[in-house]
Image 1: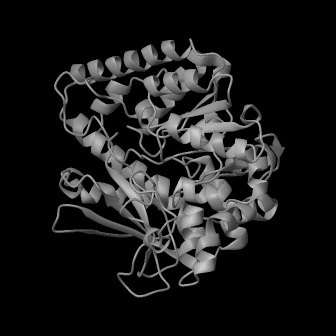
Image 2 (image 1 turned 90 degrees about the vertical axis):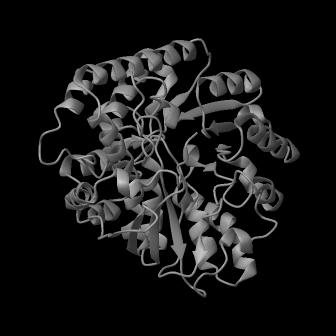
Length: 441
């Protein structure tokens, strides 16, 4: 990957189709872990996932060619898991566990393909892109859909640039990243991983970033969330679970208030029944961190750690540490996975704040794989940040119904929680979904 001339490749785009998604493993590892649980416990639950653009000033349907988008989506649908990929998944050790993916699940993956999509253009200059079907079939569309939209927008911006402008762009971006790596080298101890797949500038650029981190940080770079890059670079695949699970189960609860309140904790019970050890990392913020902790079962305090994903790292970490202490647990024996909007300044500050008080691991996303700010000789629209996001629509109630977050009044901290204004809606053709929005950060 490091030997690829990124500027020349961007300039020479003359082939019929340069695939953005090259493999079904070009996804986040937590999607596969969650998929195995979904397939085993909830595979037939009907869902609809919708790609949305919350940056309404960017008229995505006017920036991205619809024919190109369809070609990329169709190519992604043509992909299958290869024998090599399935053997690697089945025989590798993840988080210290051999054969974490069961033979029957891998046999199902061997015949898997992404389901069909529904694409149209709205009068507001935005695409309407939806994926409907069983939860097990639809969930893997999340990462490819976001990657395709974001990279097509990046490619359009790059087409406006000359050969030497592209060379300068990538040279500056490489220098910028390496200067960040040099700062991170000063932090000891450090555990850092790449979390930048869905927000990346492009697959090849993400690959360069991963190789740079591997060489520049050595053992402090503990892996990547991108399964394909983990396999190709002999790295640990990183990731546990996401907001999708509790939001789906909350939507499935319908009007049952007790089931709705219990949904986030039922997810944890299902998770610990499927996985254990190093994979026991809790995500507390789907409907509000403090409310989640107030009702959390005592056994959760014995899990390895938490990923406070919707609060500033120091603020979110302190809330979790206070909760551990209230349960009589020593935070120094627990792990905080910090990954919300981080760049080097934030990593340095959180590292200094928590050093010696709790173990930390940092997931570096957008500001790793899509930081081209001030790198272009003449800034081209679309070179700086991604815009697309995903929300899940849920059925089981009246159309146009309230969000699950609204129904869990008192179980949601306003402002930064991932439900935001999207949430999982009752109304629509399925049961459940996801509300992880990619915003400019």
